[in-house]
Length: 518
Image (cartoon, rainbow, N blue to C red):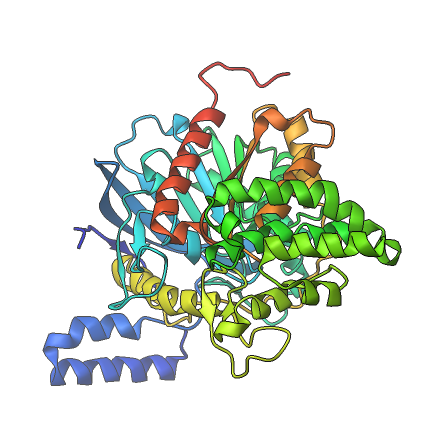
């Protein structure tokens, strides 16, 4: 256990005069009956399911990263979202990690981290990727007991301070009243707008305006941070040094018809290779030797063939289906039955059907078991069930017991944020505009080969389409990992992924006096 000095400010219990008197009477009775537990009981009486939208708890810790001992403090708390008249609309929970032996905070990078959903908090990357504490899982990412957390020797806290932010109605964050308009928060552009305002306040409160700043988002969080890159520039006059996209969405970049269908095949191939479902000559090759061959076929043969639809020559159709079967682990028959357009859900059900298993959507290394082997899709997401199994106890233990954030609020792993307005998603173009206007801004993409929700080849496609003129490609990079949506759950990729972030931050942080100009 880390040694900690704590300065704690618990939310006050909202109670009527009569209710308060009853609480005080109960405290006195319990103190008389069990004096040993009196201090604990006093603390419990102060907890509330009513959110205090502006409060903090500070604790002090130490972690060893790359053999170096790093002292740091954690501020866990809430910060308000206001309307234009200064009325509090919501309180957003955040966890801010700051290295304490740094003399020049102005030169110290600040990483601002979001996850996705869009209804999930920042738990995933906080206790499984970049933060100084790591949940208990095995080397491949599966749950183990006892639940809990331990030191993360791969954390990026050695080179950057980090704030993890939970958007409204996720984690401990809450909208504060029934009359608060949901459209203020729950939509692509509304989300971006209010979070940009919140970040401005946070940076001001923590005196971080001079620091190089980086956004990192995972899954829907990549939509969020891509839009924030431009919103922060245009509305908050805050300019970033980098944006990191972990398992990115399509970022509003159009793809449909043959392109949309064909781009799935390289992911199918990666999954089939992992489950040893490819022909022997492909199976004996390394994954990174197989995938370029499949990508080349996808771009130069599959997309043109599918574009011809029902007018594709019949022999050519059979030849294409045979190659798709070779690369996907599926039969030519089912591929032809789907007119070459195999839905992902069917693939997750079909690949291991004869073995009695399904494969996971977000991470196809995971196997599931359905009620029946028949059907067009899995009964449940095997990987997500596994992750909730491991993460939920760990984050509650960490925030409540180690960081001492006292509350009776439920920590929302998936919060009530729907319906979500997805209209006007131009976040890929937003990111391009931000890069064009800011010569400092670099972008890195991280993808897991076994991610079937935000697959790696679609991420590459998005990167290509972000920069159709080829003028920004020296500031765009992509990295692939042998795991799924949360690529960092695999121990080897946890190390490699964090090292790639370190290198990205070092490369994108300009030298003192280096001008931002073309």
